[in-house]
Image (cartoon, rainbow over all chains, first blue to last red; front, side, top):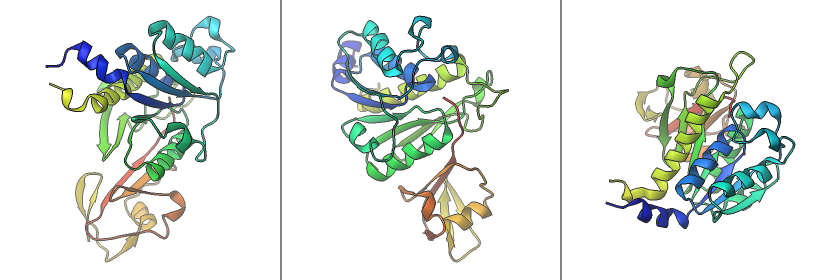
Amino acid sequence: MPTFEVIKRRLKNKKVGIAGSGGLGSNCAVALARVGVGHLVITDFDKVEESNLNRQYYFYDQIGMQKVDALEINLRRINPNIEITKHDVKLTPSNIPAIFKDCDVIVEAFDKAEMKQMILETVLLHFPEKYLVAASGLAGWGANEKITQTSFGKLYLCGDFETEVSEELPPLAPRVGIVSNMEANIVLELLLGEMRP
Amino acid sequence: MKITLNNTPEEIQAAQLTVQQLLERKKFTFKLIIVKINGKVVPKQEYETTQIHDGDDVVIFHLVSGG
C-alpha cells in the first residue's frame, strides 16, 4: 500500500491547470497545494474584492490585489516549493489551448455558466483526451445530500446541478468549499490512478 | 431509434433527428448546455445540423452559475 511519502512523490511531478481563481479555483488550488501537487497553473483577470471573502481563499489585507498574485502568495505560504505558473488574463477559446496544453488535468472553476460552457466546449474540442473536472450548482446553503458527482468519459462534474446563484441564493463558503474540494478530490483520484487501495 | 442518453438507454420514436430536435423533445430548455455525441462535443452552432443516429451515446447536461 503506498504511503503518503510515495503519494507525494507521484504528485510532485504532476501539473494541474485551474481555470479561474474565485471561490472554486482558490479553494481547489489550496487543497492541491496542501497534498503536494508539484505544479499548478492558475488564472484570473480580476482583483480581490471584499465581497469575495465570504468564500474565496483570500484575506482582508489582500483586497485590491490581483487574484493570481494573492493566490500565489497564499499557496507559497502552504508549500514554498510548489511551482506556479500564473496568467493574469481573461480566458478565451483562443488562449485556453496554449495555457493548459501541458496539464495532466484541467479544473473548471468559473462563476458564470456562460464561461463554464465556453471552457468545457473549448477543452472538449481541443483536448478530447484530457481529464476535465467541472462544477455546476453550489449556490445557497444546506442540502448536503444534493451535492454529488457524475462523469461522462474523461469529463467529471460535481455540484447539485440545479442551484443557480441569485440574490436569494448567494454563493457561500460551505457549499463552495465542499464542491471545490470535491473537484480537488477527483483530481487526486485521477492523478493517483492505480495507487488507490 | 435506440440511443444512450446520459448513461441511460432510451428509445426515441423517430427514424432520425437533429440535436436541436432531441433537445426540444426532451424539453431541455436550459440556456447553457453541453452536448456530446459518442464522446465528441457538439458546439452550440451545430445543434441544428448535427444528426443523431441509432446507437449513439448522447450526453446532455446543463450548467448553472456559481463558483
